[in-house]
Length: 270
Image (cartoon, rainbow, N blue to C red; front, side, top):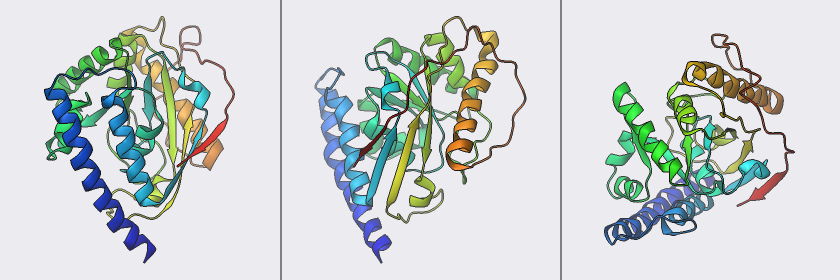
C-alpha cells in the first residue's frame, strides 16, 4: 500500500514539477537568460530532482564529496541501472550537463526543458551522430560545465558493470579534463528497469578517485577506459560484493593515467 501511494505521489509530483520548472526554463531560454554558475539553468534540475526524491521517499547518502574539485570542469562516469540514477546524481553534482538519449528530448515540455538548460542529446544507434554529441559536450566543458555520462550506454537489469562505450573516454581525452568514476547503489531496489512502481529506500552515491587525462592521447583511449572501469569494478566488489564480468585486457599507462589521492567522507542528504 505504501509503495502504491508513493508511486501516485511520485508521478503527480514529477508532472507538476516538470510543468512548472520546464516551462520556466523554456521561457527563460527564449528571453535570452544566461547559463551562469548558480543560475536558473543550474538550479532547476536540482530543484526538480529534490522534489522527485522527496515524493518517492528516498534518502540520499553521498560518499567522497571532497573529490568534486569545485571550480574545475570534469567528466562524471557513472553506472546506470535505474531511472532514479539520474535524479540522485542531478541533486548532488555541481554545474553539470547530462548526455542523455534522444528519446527523452521528444517528451513534451520535459524534452524542451532539457534543451533549454543545455543537456546533450545523443543518438545511440547512430555512431556518427553520437560522436557529434560528444563534440557538443566538449564545448560545454570549455564553457565551464562538467558532463555526466553513462559509459555502459543504457540501463542494465543488475548491478554488475557491462562493457563500456569508448565515446566518453574520447571526449575526456579531447577535453583534457579529469574523470570522476561514480558508483550509484540502491536504485534497483527503488525502481528497477522495466518497472513503474516505486519503493521508498536509500540511495548511496560513491565518488571515487579522479583519473587524470593529462598526457593521454587518442591511441590510449582503451587504456583510459579500462582504468576507469577497473576502479568502478573494484569499488562495487569491495563495497557491495558485486562481481562484474571482465572485459578485454588493455595495458594501463601508470605514468599518464593517474589517480588523485583523497579520503572518503560520507554525507547524508534528503
